[in-house]
Image (cartoon, rainbow, N blue to C red; front, side, top):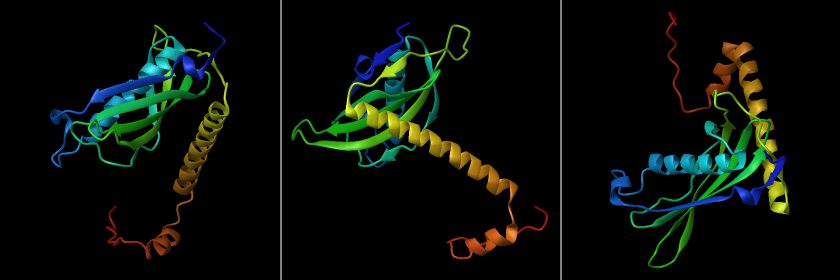
Length: 186
């Protein structure tokens, strides 16, 4: 196994024509289909870097920025943004192109955390990431920062659960669009 691999070695592009069977009731391409393509692209990118089978561990926020139309070409651009011991963060940018006008629209962005697995389905060490550009460094740092934020949010969620004071939270909720009808049995 190589000790370090550059981002460019595993950069992946998947392009697919959006056909009517991929559309939802509104006539746009179903978000679930786009997510499946994103997951497939993340896998290919991660497996190329790791040199082994990888599984999806988590997906950070998927932003749907614009609808995708039937007949457009959907291109998914993936790169390894960060590696840990067995995990890889894959950044994905999705663009739709109208083949008649050549207009390109950025439709989605997301970050997939993938884990490399050995033959026994146990996490395995992946090569480090060789950062060769300012963009590579920025993306690595941003992924590291998102990792720290996820850890903070988990800790904060656990703190709120353990320190839950009903009256304090009820006061905060008074200004929100909710109606509280407490069931005394619950």
